[in-house]
Image (cartoon, rainbow over all chains, first blue to last red; front, top):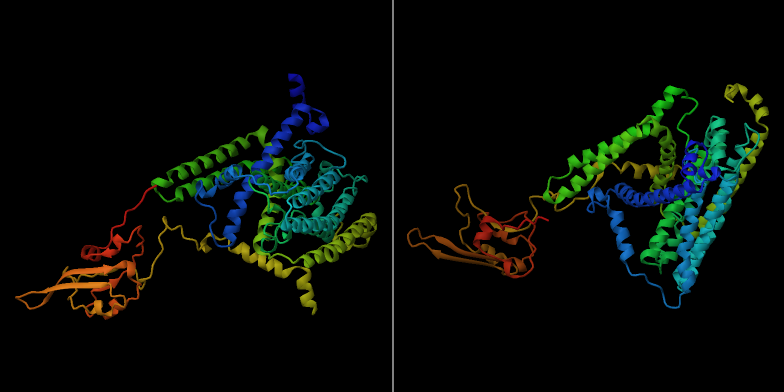
Amino acid sequence: MIEYILGYLHSDVTPGEAGNLFWVTVYVLLVFLGISVGVIFMNWFERKVMAHMQVRIGPMRVGPHGLLQPVADALKLIIKEDLMPAHADKIVFWFAPVCVVMTAFCGFIVVPFGRTHAITDMNIGVLFMLGVSSLGVLGVIMAGWASNSQYPLMGSLRSGAQMVSYEVAMCMSVVSAVMMTSLVTGTGTMSMIGIVQAQEQQHMWFAFSFFPVGLTALGVFAIAMVAETNRAPFDLPEAESELVAGFLTEYSGFRWSLFFLAEYAGMMAVSAIATTLWLGGWLRPFPHLLGGANWDTAFSLVPGLGFILLGALCLFYAVKMPKLRSMRGNLLGLAGFGAFLAAMGLFMLLPGVRTRVQDIFWFTIKVGFFMYLYIWYRTTFPRYRFDQLMKIGWKFLLPISIAVVVLTAVIGVRQELLALLFSSWFGGRR
Amino acid sequence: MTIREMLRRFFLVDLLQGMWVTFRHQNPADLVTEQYPLQRPDISDRFRGQPRLMKGEDGKLLCTACGACALACPEKLIKVGSVRDPETKKKVLTEFDFDLGRCMFCGLCEEACPSDAILLSPDYELALYTREGMELQRPQLEDGIERKVYEK
């Protein structure tokens, strides 16, 4: 038994591939915990960043700089009365949030946080993620139907139409990235880990492959994923000026918080796809241009130093806090949090730890960039009208994504020919 | 549509400009929120708040008990009481009542006063739970109202 558990530690594949059930369970729990903590953090971060972009300060009172605000919110949501409208379809009404949460979390089975830091590796990884995440529409439509109310039904119909139409453009741009994986090795792959390894072998993130083509595919995906997760400026299903709260109108308390959890988990899932497919997944910046043992060591120090910097920032703000009796708890809390972060940073500097942690760190940074973009879009852009939304999806993104697929195929096949033709321009870079 | 406009639309220049605006405003120096009990706002000297009876450089009240403020007050909420000093034949102020509950802070008493003795000062925390404390007497007008500072 103990040998079975310890045996995995020497392998360099994911626990799913190794077939080790114990470590699979541990990884599932870790990923679930990590995503939940990420959602809690995102709740605070979104309110803070939105507030600062709107020249406000945001939550400030619960905990130092409002750090405990999401905890207070979660507590309030759990205590709140759980209403169910009269004549609602009880079973479907109960199942809808469960369905949405399950689909949002299922996608993380194949997300590679590092070469060994994934629950499992599937040879149809991308397809699995897209398939599972589009099942979320079902939950939304169920929620709208079961509520026995007009606004939720309207919201869920909008959501269904929107998610279905943006799925097409999204998948087309994914296809172009999957085609790029076959460039050097000759065999393409849909495995998430395989896609990152292909980028490693080709010495280039797919965002920069065939210069404007990969970037365009990423752009199409980045727009489609905002619409796919029903976020501003495509948040028509929840347009509060027209539909109260869309399919969420009749939900309250814990069920509503499940929808909230699923929304943020879904955002992270699609961001993880974008990161894996175009931004090199867990690879650190410039793994080949700045290669060699020295650069490896230098980059592996970054996570630890980053955490120490965060801890120092916390201590700095703790010192800057107003000196009042009533603020003493907050001050100590922030200082303690800073000390905790700094200690974690020191722990990450240990040679054994830093080589394992850096994959997760770079992956999280890249996903975090997309999460920041989500907030940034939300504060900047006004909501689109529904016909404008459909026009963008079908008349703008879909043709571009199909063109991207065709261009990828043509350039990929004729690459040697093109390289000959433009060798004077590109200077034989490839 | 000119080529310039088309390029602007194609490369989403307007959207990027908007995003730059929101990004810029994250600068903490731009914040306009005041955390009121911790940070107290700077109030202009011309703000009309709590009424005060002013003293001169010699420490005596400037008020001559002429009653011009009581006449000027549209709400008739000022009551000036005085006695004539038999030796100097001058009026001496005995009582000065100011009913803050009816005051609309128009500042006409301030304007009417010939000796600049009454002033609507920039102190602003005047809310009370009952109407009783609203009737200000001479000590409160001369020295200001002491507010209890609450600690959590």
